Image 1 (cartoon, chains in turn blue, purple):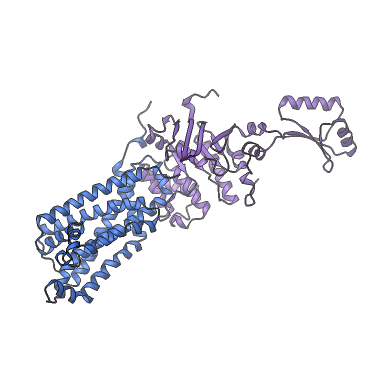
Image 2 (tube, each protein chain N blue to C red):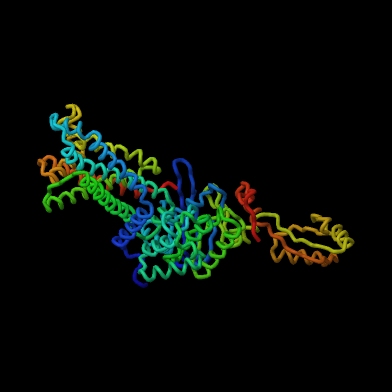
Length: 269
Length: 323
């Protein structure tokens, strides 16, 4: 007998790369999904700065209106809203992909099964980071002036990558449990609502007491406070830093296990 | 059959599958010798697709065992996958990318080198008449083109066993013929083909062996000819040009069905050599000489009716037989 045929040797790395290429190709051919999702955070950014900016800053600063101040406050929150929105796009594209006939083909090929999901995840994180750079650019254009050191910049980039990764894995799970694209965007809605219920637009202290606890501990407030600290030098606090990293790791592991279990389920014939 | 397990591309025993209390496959045995075409024939809902899904590792059987290309279906699923290619009922192409990109994707997933991948892609696109459409998104392809691309993608990894689930459903007659030609070529190259179809003429045209699946059970197995002999309806037909000779023969041979317009008589027969000789002896002794003698076996339609007790789907108005 000869040795195992070449095709039997596992090539997980190459399979991941192939699937990543496939997803980036999709994104390049059909960028409208991602671009549409980007519209919401950008519009909100402009709306809150140029329309509500004076009122919002006056409310936060004890009556003293300063729009430039509010730009600095708002941009970190808008960045994570962007990450949440693009992960909604991931949920939709995963759900769509699962309804395609090619999924059955992938499942009957001698490839690394996880590569189908990993391709989506890496592709989405890359897209999210590109979207974040774009939104950050718009922020800078309207007066956002971070004073971060290079090390703080690296930490901020790392935080955003980690958050994107965790949100993406959750989004993949959402995409896998959804029967179709519409379902995915419905089930994914709470994920997009979370940033609105965080310290993105107003500080947690300014919220009613009964709500404060939720706003303080849900994932987005610690993400946002940590990023604010890194980019603008405000106080992060050990609690927020730990919560941010903890949520990232927790969501990533949870999303990964959930997605893996869902994907390994037998497709309904 | 003297074939050992080694020569069997597919050997399955007692495959069972149910969803809730609905039994889809109720213990089926299938043996397909390497290098042959096997056709699983049955009406809609008979369980054909479920059988393909199980044998191609897409879903798990509730019971039974199977070896594909010598590998155990469950314990060595990845080895089975390396040996097979599957073209499902619903087109398994990536509509968002071009035909050529689909092919290169398959080359990458089959771990071919860049050069090999390009070469195989170019060859198959040429062979399946897709060169012109290669740079267009697959979603813009017609049904026949999608099916051809689908099979071309399946062939990238040079699988030894190919599963085709209703490969010609929804194709126009010309595309259907092209598909038949493709399938014949595959087998001439040594590949084993497992084909499901609801078209009797397709099984008749292509398959070395046919199994009829109905209600989750195999109700018959054999070559098309063997199956046809299972049902009554075969006959020997004698045609005369002289009306007088026809009348004489009709009177002499009482056990016949007359066709006065064509001047033909039908004598029931199962079409075996022995019966044919008996009929000839009988005609000789009665001094009857016809101008034309032909042996008719029942066609698969008769078999299908008899075995499944259901209307033949291929007879529905929108289908036609191409000869």
